[in-house]
Image (cartoon, rainbow, N blue to C red):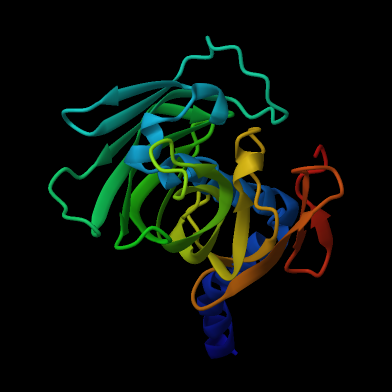
Length: 287
C-alpha cells in the first residue's frame, strides 16, 4: 500500500505538468493568434512595392505614385534612395494605412549587369501601430525574378510585444506594354514603353512570436499584388493562399489556412482563414 502511495505522489508533478500543457492549448485564443499572424504577414508585404522599383525607375518616380506619398531623396553618388514618410505631402489615396519614419534602399554600386543586389532598411519605421526593424536583401540576374532573403526582422507592437522572423522568397514581376510612340529622330522606328503591372510571390517566413512560440508562414500557391492598388495604398494581395503553422510544444503544431479573395470593388480584398478547430474567420471585416 505504501509503495502505491509513493508511486502516486511521484506521478503528481507529471500529471500536473500534462494538465498545464493541455490547458495552454485549450485556452489559446485562436482568433487572436490568427490576427497576430495576419499582422506579421501584412507587415512583411506592405513595403514590398518599394523594393520592387529599380534604381532607374526611381529617377522618374513621383512621390504621389507611392503608398503614403513619401518624400523621395536620391543620392547619385552612393546610389541610395531614402523614402521619408513625413506626412507633409498632400496624399489622396483610397487606402488608409499609415506610415512614419524612413525606408532606405541601397543599390550595390559594384555589381555588374545583369547581376543586381540591393537592400531595404527600416529606420525608425512604423506601419500602423507596429514598429519594424532590420534589413531585407534582394538580388536579381534579370528584370523579372527577384530573390529576397532576410534574417532577424523585428516587429514591435504598441504594447511592446516583439516578434522576430527570417524569410526567403522569390518574386516574379509582370510587365505590360504601356504605349507605342514614334521616335522623334526617325519616323520609322517605334519605342516600346513597358509598365510594371503586378508581381507574385512564393516562399516562407519562420520565427518566434510574442508568446514565445515558433511559427511559420508559407506561400505555396503564389500570392499576387497589383501595382495600381499599391499606388492607392491598398496593400493586400489580390489573390493567393498562405498556410500558417504555430508550435504547441514538442512535435505538435496547429495550422491556419488563409486565402485572399478579390472583391467586386476595386482593390478591396477579403482575407479568410480557417482556424485549427475548423471555424472560418474574416480577418479584415472593415475592408
